[in-house]
Amino acid sequence: MNVSQSFKLALKSLRTSKMRAFLTMLGIVIGVAAVIVIISLGNGLTDMVEQQVEKVGITQMYAYAWGRGDGTTLNLDPQQMYDLIEAHPDVFDGVTPWVGAGSGVRRDGAEFEKTKIYGVSEAMYRPETGTTLDGNTLSRGRYLQYVDVARRQKVCVIGAWLEQEAFRGDALGKELTIGGVPYTVVGVLAREREEMTEGGSDDVVYIPYENALELTGSRNVTLYQVMAVSRDTVSQGKALIADMMQNFYQDKDAYYIETMLESVNMINAMMGVAMAVLVAIAAISLLVGGIGIMNIMLVSVTERTREIGIRKSLGAKRRDIRSQFLIEAGTTSAMGGLIGILLGCLLATGIGSVLGGMLLEQLGTSGITFNATPTLGAILVSFGVSVGIGVLFGYLPANKAAKLNPIDALRYE
Image (cartoon, rainbow, N blue to C red; front, side, top):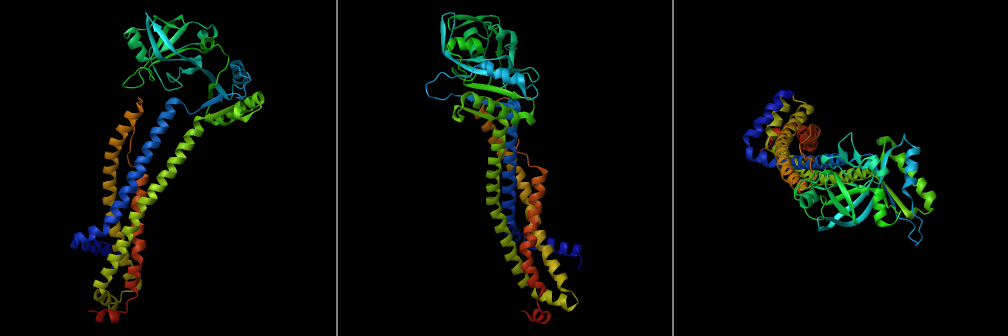
């Protein structure tokens, strides 16, 4: 028989014993479906992380200047950081100090004690993307500009919750009091979360960082958010900042620098390891399925011993018998692989929708999606592995059938 005839015989055998064939394929079905679901969910999580990073910016660096912690007043002045940034325009794209000025905002006698006040520079806003470095967008007005920071003008940008509570949804051009000084609202951020709460991420005020330093009564800035020109200059930028801080503090424990690129690479590496472990666990089902195929093929060889003897007596060679049983094993596992792929795609889509909705609701981020759609690569690999498992575990029964003595096989009852 040729390959086509062997394949037709294998399909006939599957149709004849449907329940036995299904139970034989069950391990392959479960293993392939599990692998597709795991890979699809892993790809969905990776894509969601990349979307979040893309929204914030992969070229960002965070430089923490904690100081020596020995009671000295050795503090890095913001101008020193600006001098470094300006000296390397091919590496850096901008910097904004982050100054936490506490809380406490007043409007017409009402005090908002939980409203957080932050001092930043104009570099906090990226005109090319229309978002801040934290991924927030403006709903109305403008963001802080260079002239506001340079002249220490009394202007601010507020969050959506504060606008709603303090100005009843109409804050542009109106004033609120920060540290006893009136500030004019020039911009309002779009709501970050569906459910806004007091003291939450939508209850904030951004003012020029020099104004915030005046409120704190100190020149100490503990955090600088730095942007590199591109992904390729991130490592160089980190090294330059580290050298400057080391020369200033003479103490490696006085500062810490992390990059968004390193964080993303670390997250992806951890997710890759977790996915590999889960796929390996799911692959156990494929191993069980392979053993099931080998077992049923051994039974099939025993049941068809006389058929093998007749074929050999008519001139069939060992390779012909071996190929017939290998094709039957491969067909069985391939059918199981196809059913597993269909089941895996359905489960991945369903679980992805539910899990994605829960994740996005918990994170509360807008503009981020979660798609656990199976990739063509995962489907092809799963199908190839399922067929390979069938052929691999079917070889022993096929080889046993090929080595049967035709005379003994014809005498078999």
